[in-house]
Length: 87
Image (cartoon, rainbow, N blue to C red; front, side, top):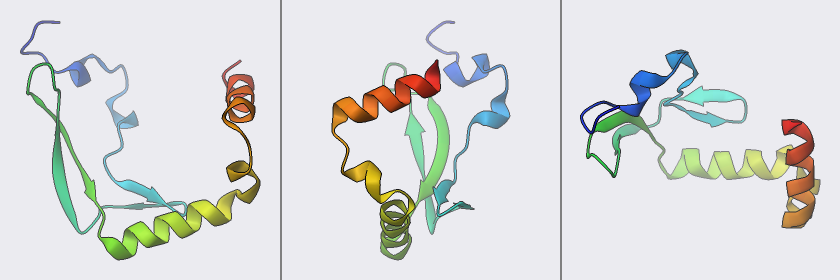
């Protein structure tokens, strides 16, 4: 890959790149979009959802309700859980 090639072109399955926001199990396009650039090359990688205040509050509430026990775990405990998922 050279400096003018987007790393996204190397994806085996480009459909895995999601540019909307996942909020409470739903993909939201957001009230606007913003560009994400590769800092090494300046190339545009994607445009992603830019959530407004209401959508952001809904995302935070959904995250808090989804797994209240998760927030009480230490970083070490979360690490162990994620490592098990990976293995």
